Image 1 (tube, rainbow, N blue to C red):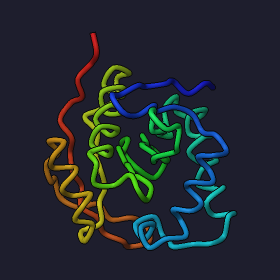
Image 2 (cartoon, one colour):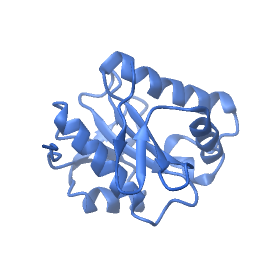
Image 3 (cartoon, rainbow, N blue to C red):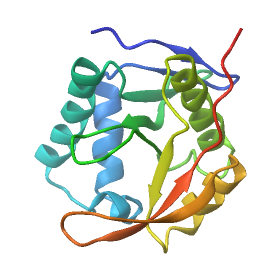
Image 4 (cartoon, one colour):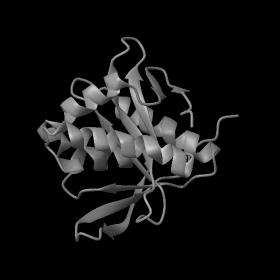
Length: 171
């Protein structure tokens, strides 16, 4: 299945490429990947994550958009519509790589994917965020999401559940 392309003022969001893998693998080796279970220097972990997100498109018809900074062509992050069988509904998640944080790119990419989801009958979406992940909580709130309680994973981990407002469907 072909991944659609979404263009924002500064990002091109689309399918997986090997440069995106290398950037994600580098991200996974840093402390910034702690909310994904990292850090990990095992490339198999990074590869597996990318392949799971890629396969998600085949299974669900939606999934991860890998972000490229349009002006430079550099991989900038990943914005996902994640809905494994153990979640009741799709989750909007995001991550930006080192050097791209603090520029508003996370909000730009997440809003674009949320709007794409609305145009494809998904939403309002949730984001599941670790209670100590202040930057993601602030971004969810900046996007208009509101705390809706908690979610407990099968392994016992508890995260905050944020509900996003409906996305804007492009005319």
